[in-house]
Length: 121
Image: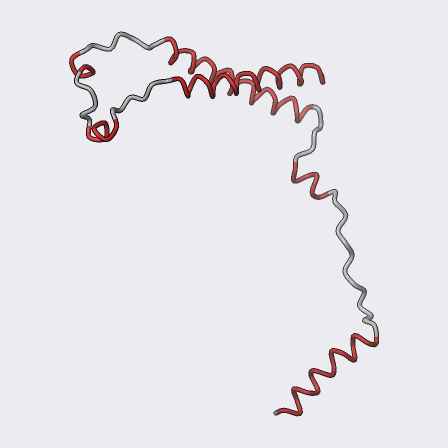
């Protein structure tokens, strides 16, 4: 089971890197500020769409593989009884609160400011 998980992790990381590169290589659709109002490039108005470019198809395929490997890795991690970050935090020992009996010096130190405040009134 562990080798399958590692294999899917490797595929997932490769697809992540490839998807980043493919998205960065794509050309933008808008022509700067003119693209905001639909005025970017008059050739797009008169030309009929000739279908999707290869890079757009590759982006869609890689995005689908990314989603598939994400779901598979999630299912495999739950089957392998891996712990989440929240579960790991619950296993950290919490320091114990001080006991109810305070040291005598601390009790006296607390009583002195209270007595001084009463005398000022």
